[in-house]
Length: 255
Image (cartoon, rainbow, N blue to C red; front, side):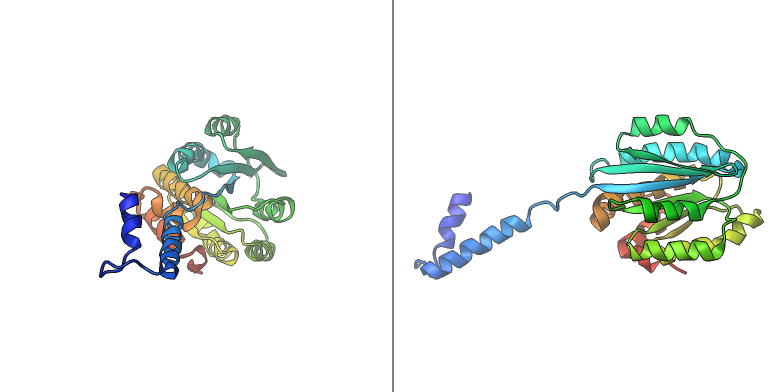
């Protein structure tokens, strides 16, 4: 079939042979068309998942374990994704893992984590990302409920990450009766917007929402907007809203 097509390209509509110039033009257009049909190269995503592991987050930790493992299965066909875990807990503990591209190793690492009472250290996490990560980072997912950090410091580091094109996707576990989580909402929204990310809210018992939202961000990290388009359509309304924002551009989030 290709041979017949090439032969037809060498004749005009009236059956006469094309000039050498027209033949070269047609051949060049044919090559351009074949190149345009090639798949877009996949890119490697580097996603930091930051967890609040203070005392109120025990149930959230169980959901995060399932969500991060499911994330790899959801995006494995779109491109490679490496995940680094960063967490804080207790009075002054804030740690970062290496980069994981194996879901089993990541799951094993998360099984060893536990929660301890203490105050939030969100600014410390953002400072770590801004100052210590030398290689490109696709984004930061922060999963937490409360915020006891200095608002001014958080705003400063959010602006720095925005300048470095490192969006923060805030997954806010917000209970209707929890005044502390409600008080944190405005600052969390600013943190997402200033960095070019997205603010998403979910309820404490919404494990499915967390899994789908994390998978959507991972798809975005692995292959950009095209990755989000190829990912499975989420079932939960919160995840569908996040997917829509990723398609439009994370920077279009509400303030």
